[in-house]
Image (cartoon, rainbow, N blue to C red; front, top):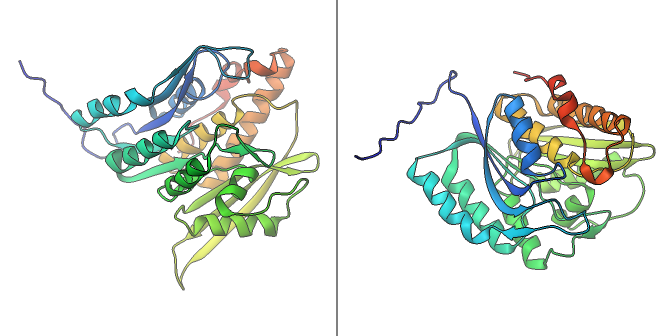
Length: 295
């Protein structure tokens, strides 16, 4: 007996779905174990594409690690047989030049009409490129960013992607605007520069380009939030999950960024209250009901 594939027709009544390409860490609240519940909470079906399987993330003294690169393409081939396309595609940490290439192919094969492609170019922090990142990987990431509608680099990553000299301390709005414009010129319509240091505050700089050429327009905002607690694993994954799901649901970017930042702040405060170790991330489960779908 042959299998019959019944595909849903596009329409407002169809539940939207997003593919998220990232690693799966069993413990520590990061990557896919964060994305799946948050995107699901926002009423978007989250379909994971694992890049690696870890017992726990690498901030712990040791972990089990299984590189999934060789399995990614056979995994995706089965989705091709099902005729799948997605309303949203989000990417997280990619561990090799080959993985970045696979993700570029995935976007071309599975992005449905009007799909939101969001790239979180996880490459470095605090002015330094991660030790695992090579020059070839940086070049591949620049190519991947060109395929995105939304890109969410931190300041370090934005500097890498735009060949801008990084400096310590606060960043001026005009500096952030110059980098966002330069990054948007490569392809993305929307740029969010995350975790911008600003004294006792952290900011998110949101930039949106409206078309190209003489009739092009642009808007930007720089939202700051008072720092609370200490740096924790997984907060960037929470941010990306909210932005991707909201974008699929048609929520304006500036509103979505504020929602994500406010929710992360509440999660950190709850984690401090419950004395959750920093390596264990943020206990978003305790207050997930506060995160409402915004349609």
